[in-house]
Amino acid sequence: MDFVVPSIYSRMLKSPHILIAGTTGSGKSVALNSLLYSAMIEAGETGKNAAFTYIDLKMIELVDWRDLPNCSRYVDRPEDAPKALKDAVDSMYARYKVMQNQHIKETTEGHVYIVVDELADFVNDKGCLERLVTLGRLGRAAHYHLILCTQDPSRATLSAPLLQNMTCRVALRTKSPIESRQIVGVAGAEKLPEHGRALLDMDGAVENVEIPMVSEKDIKTLIETLRNDEIHHSSYTSKQDVVEDDSNDNSWLFRPPMTTEEKLRERLSSLERENKSLRDSGCGVTDKRLQTLLNEARSTIARLNAENEELRKQPNSFSDTQKKEDQQQETNAHLYETIANLKQQLEKAKKGPEVPRWKTFLIDAIITTLVWLALILFVF
Image (cartoon, rainbow, N blue to C red; front, top):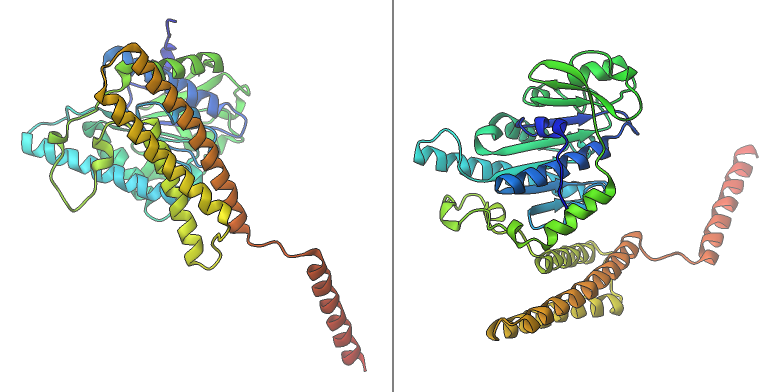
């Protein structure tokens, strides 16, 4: 299938940083996914190495892009967003050290996109705004790009220091002229139709443009193509290009994109850490079923590694490759199910043990009796 990039998104991607904002239901998610669709195609056609970090605190808007080889990090928890931005800033500074040593004005490394679905959910958390401003101010030469989206185009979300470096701003329909001016500097977005049109501000020139929608079918087709296309499994950069600096751990960016198995292991490790934290706080899970699930997942991963190692020693015939793919698919499906069960168990643990109904009734009765006794004593 031939994938076509709408011209408006191609124009937007020439800008170092992009802001998409509008009221709820104005088509922000459609515009963002269409923009990502275009970015993936352009990266493939130009041979430009690109890595994507997704901050998706709604947990469903960007999840389709999570398993692609060029996904360096996927964040779906508010407490993890500051660390992800810190790592991005540290890695950007590592590139500047290389540029200083080589006396060059622009890095030769690949492009890194920090994609945020809902900026308002964490922008005011400790350190987040400062790191976003730093990425916006210094990102161009280091090939770091921000793609920020919000349904709350207020001053609390879109502060002046952040907007200063957003060279491409897209105002979808807004609730008021004030919100329109906050995004693109002029009123008018409040008069736009509900979908399909926007005010586009690129370097101070505001114009009314059409925002085409890329269909979900085309997006899913592209994602499946990228998953199966080994060309896009780029190594991104070599370890020799990394600045040897022990003060910051920047290795997450400079390694190859994670495989499906590595992402599953990472999720499992995250669940184990969460369970340990619950135990330490005194409300952890003691259910034997949970421990069985944890052991089962670890054993499955160990078996996968052993089987893959055995297959690597054998000749690379078609049957071997097919066998390996079948084993991986079977194991991945099993691990996804196991991790889903773990999540359910941990959610139950967070809520704590359920109080029997008779205890609740007894507590209510005692409280009611005490209230009446207090009233009687007060009256008499």
